[in-house]
Structures are given as structure tokens and as C-alpha cells.
Amino acid sequence: MDLVQMQKSLQDYTKSLFLEGILDSQFLQLQQLQDESNPDFVSQVVTLFFQDSDRILNDLSLSLDQQVVDFKKVDPHVHQLKGSSSSIGAQRVKNACVVFRNFCEQQNVEACHRCLQQVKQEYYLVKNRLETLFKLEQQIVASGGMVPAVELGF
Amino acid sequence: MGMETESQFHVLAVDDSLFDRKMIERLLQKSSCQVTTVDSGSKALEFLGLRVDDEDPNVLSTSPHIHQEVEINLIITDYCMPGMTGYDLLKKVKESAAFKSIPVVIMSSENVPARISRCLEEGAEEFFLKPVKLADLTKLKPHMMKTKLKKESEKPAKEEESEVSKPEIKEEEDPSVIEILPLHQELESEKLEPLMSGGNKRKAMEEVISTDRSRPKYNDITTSV
Image 1 (cartoon, rainbow over the protein chains, first blue to last red):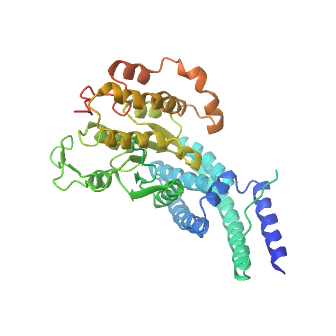
Image 2 (cartoon, rainbow over the protein chains, first blue to last red):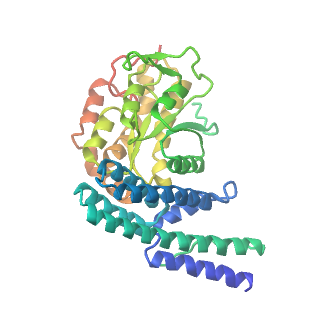
């Protein structure tokens, strides 16, 4: 695949993530923060997000598996995940967290279990897609090309 | 007038989340600010040079080793933090004789009107909803400029000073009122007109006390001298 084709693939792939609602405009904000002085900002921040989220999801699983669920512990975790997913533009994860928090407030354990599954699903989806996105970028850079700025015509 | 736009503003950013610190740091850098990040309110106070008395947390003393070389032009802090919240930090800064003139901005991922008005009433210049955007940070410049102007123009005549700062007051005041409303930033600028004549509590308070916007609550405002 030549460079131009790779760049087009990347653009199309990125667009699809927005069209599917997996990413929202906040992701564009992140890209605006990346420049020559901070060329890896987006991947750095996203990596941090993955690390944080893996930990949080693990803690949430443990907390919800307790005999008596301590919602005072569960809610802050969901709050944090909602915040960080919102900050990187992981729209569907954020939305799943909003629903999750509502059920936390109601102290509905069963619903919370379902919510956790939903959050995990959305999280693994965005994680997978972003990892693919970064791989595409790396291929372009490795071939001596520049990663094109995102142009969203919709 | 010595408006040194070349010299950078230095912002102290406070947030317990590493992720959020990285975000706000980059946002501020991209807005041409120098940034120092700390992960707690107490570390922020330490950095400023304030020591909290362990016996009586209400007693704040100034450490003999104040960071005089590091001039902080603005403090931006998360609201929800363990231990000292952003609100607590705001109060401590505004209660300190040495640092009350430093503008403070609060950030929160939760849109709670009561929280927002409480912060603004305590002296916060702005309240940003997370995720904070680059466009939000353009609102910081007027607040930071005031601290620079104040230091540069130590004019004895207060009237002169109010002439200097007055044009900025009206502009920057209403945006902070608007922050209460969960509207998109672009929409908010259109709302400036109707809100200017509104009976805003803080605005009324300041008209009574002084035109010095950065010290809304105190009467000992002689910056001059």
C-alpha cells in the first residue's frame, strides 16, 4: 500500500469512528493539542486513559462482587471513568457511565452489574479502535509520511 | 503603559487525577502559559509558600521561604479532590493576605448550580465544566493581565487605576456569570447583552465595595500606596 492510500485509509477509519459515535468532538480537541513540540500527545493521553480505565474496571468488578456492595466505593470509580472517557472523546463509554451512575444512585445491584458489562463492552470497543488508529498512524510515519489532520466534512 | 505580553503567565494547576493534570497542563501550554501542576490543595498552598498550622487548620502562616521568584498569575483547580477540595483551597487563598489577589478558577465535571454560585461568591473568577476546552482558556487572559498590570502600575492615585481596570471589568464579569448556565461556549457570548443589566449579586457587591475586581470581598484594598 502506498503512502497516499495509507493516509486515505486513516482518514476514512477516523471518520468512521465519529460516524459511529465511538468518538466525539472532544477527540478533535485532543488532536488540536498535539503539535511539533508535543507530537505524541494524543497517544500519551489515550495510553493513560487505558491504564486508568483498566484499573477502574477491575476495581469495579471487585466492588460489585462483594456480598454487600458499597456504593460509596462504586460511584467515585464510575465518576472518574465518566470524566476521563469524556475528556478523550470516548462518547459511548461516557454515556454508559452516565447510565451506570443513575443505577448506583438507586443502589440497584443487578442493574449495576449489567451497566458494568455495558461499560466494559464500549470500553473494549473504543480501545480496539484507537489502537488500530495508532497503528495506522505509525505505519504512515514509518513510511516517511505525515499523518494528515482530521478533516470532517459532516 | 508597560503591557508585557511577551513575558509568560504562570499558572498553578491543581488536580488529584494524573490524567486531568496532563490534560490541563497541555491546554495551558498550548495557550502559551507556563504551568506548574500539583496533585493536592495542600501542595498548592505549599508551593505558594503558605504553611497550614497542624494544630489549628484555620491558622495560615506565611512560610519564611515564600516563592517570591515564582509569580503565580492564576490558580486553576479541580473541585472534587480528597482532603482539601477546590473550594477549600479557594477559601484559603482568598483569606490569605499575601495571595488573595491571585485569580482562582474552579473546574468540575459536574454541573451543580449551587456549587457554581458558591464558588463564584467565594471569589472564583470562573467556573469551567470539564472537559475543559482550549476556547475556555481564552477567558483566563483578562484575569491574569490584571495581576500583571497591578504589579507594573503601582499608581498612587486609585482613580487612575480604576480607569485602567474598569474597561476590563464589564467584559470579564459577565462571562463568569454565564458560566453558571450549561450552555455551549459560542452561545454564551450572545447572551452577554441581556445579562449585563441583570441583578447579579456579586456585581452589586463589587459596585458597592470597589472597582477592583480581583478583591471582591475585602475593604482593605489599597493596592496603591
